[in-house]
Amino acid sequence: AQTVTQSQPEMSVQEAETVTLSCTYDTSESDYYLFWYKQPPSRQMILVIRQEAYKQQNATENRFSVNFQKAAKSFSLKISDSQLGDAAMYFCAYRSASADKLIFGTGTRLQVFP
Amino acid sequence: DVKVTQSSRYLVKRTGEKVFLECVQDMDHENMFWYRQDPGLGLRLIYFSYDVKMKEKGDIPEGYSVSREKKERFSLILESASTNQTSMYLCASSLAWTREQYFGPGTRLTVT
Image 1 (cartoon, each protein chain N blue to C red):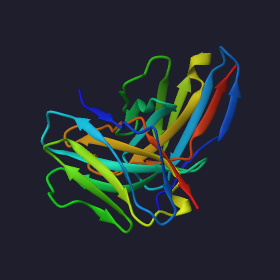
Image 2 (cartoon, rainbow over the protein chains, first blue to last red; image 1 turned 90 degrees about the vertical axis):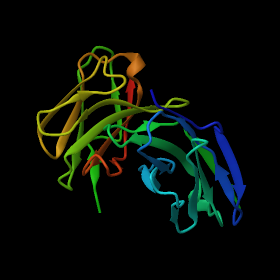
Image 3 (cartoon, rainbow over the protein chains, first blue to last red; image 1 turned 120 degrees about the horizontal axis):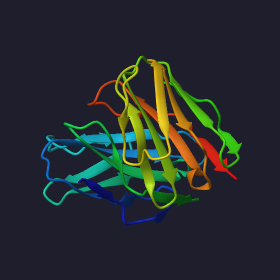
């Protein structure tokens, strides 16, 4: 069975600095998708970034980028120029290309200090 | 923009009550999902549906049932609420299996 591990329950960063959130996963499949979701306090969960396993190029969305290491089964999220609005719970998620559900990690709470 | 709405943000029920949580999406998505979110456990899938009147068990279906009579609406039912079902419940929908899921705002259910 696939698993997703986020080993950092909490992280903090100074405004304008860069922070990296870690995520590792375990799977025997070769075709899958990886996601980072953001859940601000008392607000809706939204997708931050998505990576297809067959793509070697790391996905980037504005200040958010990933470091996808397929052989190491690692999928970290880098937030550059951190803003106060980045404070949230961040979830890493895995989805097999042949299955129908997301498998989530336990989340990392990010605090951003001015 | 995709909109997923849930009937209540906060709900307080008593042990043994029957509880209905409603979810509606407005983007004609085929797939809908119910998760529960607990601290330190992340999100766990309760049930999902890939079509009207179709349902599949997720990882933790015990104590729950679902109903999908219309494409846009997916209901989660707690037949007899128990205190261990106190949690945040999130609904999500997606257009197809290869697409990301869009989430509702969540319902924080407290069972006393």
